[in-house]
Image 1 (cartoon, rainbow, N blue to C red):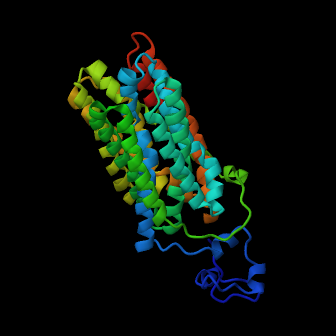
Image 2: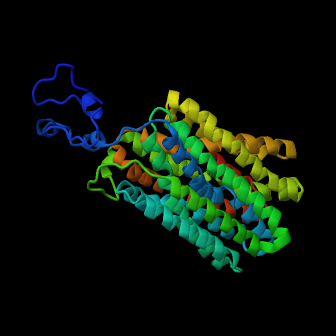
Image 3: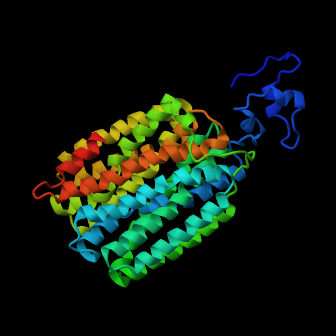
Length: 422
């Protein structure tokens, strides 16, 4: 941002001086007449503290919003396998994949609506709506017995609820941090990995003893408590009121933003294929026992925690896009290498490496987009539009992979290739 010289002439403005003004003191009429209109919102906005107890409290609260949203996506593999072998036995793998894919799609796609609403100051309404829909979806899933019932409750209802939570959980953090933004978002996003671990392990440990219904309901009660607690402690920095739009066409005039949005769509098309299908692959084609097959998803989520935090520290120094690109390339390489994993040790190594790299790819898009410029008061809208592209990839990739797996004698080769090329 260019600043005026130390000796400004009459009618010019010293932007550095104005940024230091108390927020309840308005600049003079002469000054405001000469401010660039495109910058005026951010000039009046509170300066991000980049730390402090209040800022880190938002990261803590965001952790549990990620826990309840991405945690379900990251744990869907355990449901995919359970539905295929028990609850929805006989339903094709591609059909079951639609449940998780629609859930993940709505998580990101709803951002095109929640982003602008967040920018308007409706964080509390969005978070409470998301909490209600997620808990309702879990409870309805617990009493679902047919494919269409599970699709509506777990796919659509939980998906809509997590969509109301996701963009606000990211946007709150970006408002409080600048120099430490990537690390803060990465730390908050580890909630998605921890949630994936907790949901999958808890479901597996309970379903054989108390049944599908009560195992799912207990997860619902736990989610409700965590969401209510996190919403109660989160408070976004308030930005000046002004006109907001559901869509910012001007953002796509920036080539870096457009290329990033398209790249997210392609990358997310194959990114979650291992999360959905690695358990079935390990059990059916490697011959691992049920216990070890289940542990692979947990291993991936544990590795993802480190992938979301360690590279984020480096990203604050080198730039998030410079870390995200090689990480995305790494997931593609690992997708192709998955074809050669024919033993338990090699598959475990794959789970660790892929979990780490995919964790980086998932955690850095928000800070990558936020670092591309634009007003902080529009960050929710810009995030929502970009995530809509990613949502399209999530919606199509996993069902296509499931269809390829269903092909007689096709095994997992087609799904593994799709994971690699995208």
